[in-house]
Length: 195
Image 1 (cartoon, rainbow, N blue to C red):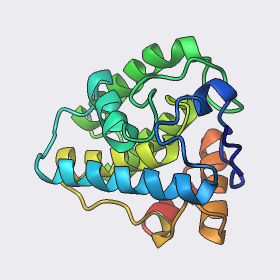
Image 2: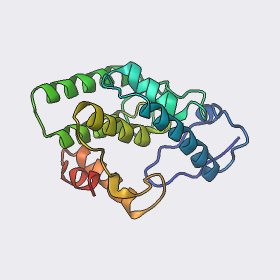
Image 3: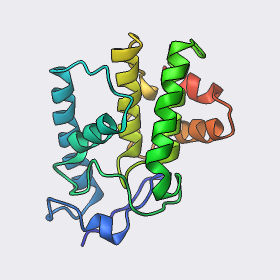
Image 4: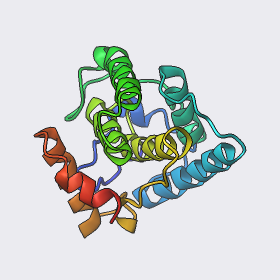
C-alpha cells in the first residue's frame, strides 16, 4: 500500500481511502500527482464541451469531483466518510453544502458582494466544509472559476499563477489567506486570487 508524503496544509488520506486507489502501481506522491492531473485535464476537456450554469447543487458538485478524480480514486464523487483535521463532521457535509449553495444564490440575487468576493467566499466555504477525502482545494478552485465564468460572467481567478499542489511560497500564501478567511478577514484571499 502506498504511503504518500503530503505538502504542508494537505489533509492525509486514511488507510481505507488509500485502498480506493485505482492504479495500484502508484507508490509515490509524484506518480499520484501526475495521474490526478491527467484526470483533471480530462475533466477540463469535458467542461469545454459544456457551459454548465446549474452548478450550485450537490449533484453537480459530486459529478465534477468524479470527473476530476474518477480514474484515480474509487470513491471520487462521494462525500468523505471520516472526520479530518479540517472540515465539518462528515455527516454534516450534505446539509452544509446545501446551506452554502443557498447562500450563494442569495448573494447573487441580492448583489450582497461583488462577483469576485462571491466566488472567493464560495471557494473558502467549500474548502472549509472539506467535502471529499482528497482533491478539495483543486475542486473548490475549479468550482469558483466555473461560478465566475458560467454564472457571474467574469474571468477565472489566477490563484497566484503557481502550482498550489506543491510546496512553494504561493501555496503558503494561499493557505494563510484561507486561515485569515476562517477569521472573517477576506482581504488576503481577495488579494491572492487575482495575483
